[in-house]
Amino acid sequence: MGRILAIDYGKRRTGLAVTDMLRITANPLLTIDTSGLLSWLDDYVRREQVDTIVVGYPRQMNGQDSETVPAIRALEDQLRARWPQIPVVEYDERFTSVLAHQAMIAGGMKRKDRQNKANVDKLAACIILEGYLEHQS
Image 1 (cartoon, rainbow, N blue to C red):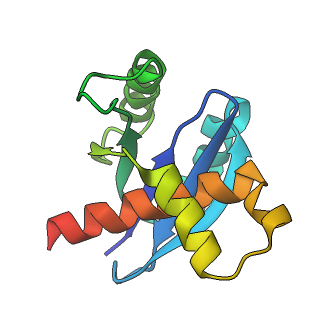
Image 2 (image 1 turned 180 degrees about the horizontal axis):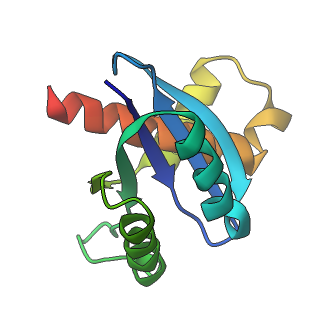
């Protein structure tokens, strides 16, 4: 059984989270410059067994797609072309940034660290992954 990898895509930065091998826990992995995302994923998929990639799908409050959807669709196409054996699924990412901020406050993270958007992005990816895991069970 392999890991599930979650992606919180952004035009500049992308947050990543991953499950343990038993798919019990979701853990923030890192935030990477989006321009290097596919190269980083190439290396990661070569080193780790990844069974599913979950991509955060951004919707607005009214349910309409957000402005980043075309870029996310292009990313999904690239992921499917590179690794046809790995399913790529979408998961609604509404409110993940808000939930990430709330989790950082609840966890006692210092204000300076909460303002670091890289921390928010990888935690948002973790929240996407937790929601996906919960939805699967």
